[in-house]
Length: 108
Length: 121
Image (cartoon, rainbow over all chains, first blue to last red; front, side, top):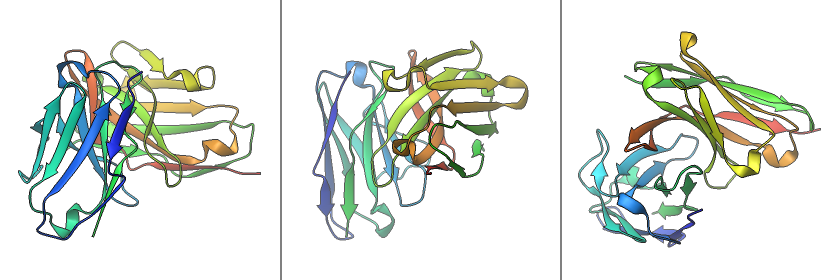
């Protein structure tokens, strides 16, 4: 089972700043089968990125994903107030079980 | 517009069972997988298991083997998650999620609103 470790646990930034979130896998994620989700309090997760770098339908282009192998990054170029949330990475390369990272909380 | 609508909150006694439904609309139900993901209070996301309705095949993470059953009914475009022998640690929000396939692997592009299951004596 691939274990995903996200860092930092909490990231404190201001609107307009750039956010860089990391997701490290315990072994290589084949074919970059890695996704990113955003979750706001009391809501379901929302798909942002799949295939490590492909934005899901309707996701603003300030969100971008990169990386390969064991190291992946979600970047939010200029933070908007609505971007403050918890972000999870998920691998779907060796599945099931699908595994999620423990999350990064992005706070103001 | 794809929507997954789940059944309402449940309060259960330890040792009992719970069944949560997830009804899909706006898409081709059989063409996708449905997974169940849970989130304990203040915690992260945990994949429990899933089903591919067109094949009727289910898979479960080892942690829930023997206690979890996931089924689907194509006629009603619904999936069901039944968890037995409930304990307090099963208190969580349970989400269904649609699995979109690429090369036989699934990520989750649409999610239900979540169902809170509280296990308490």
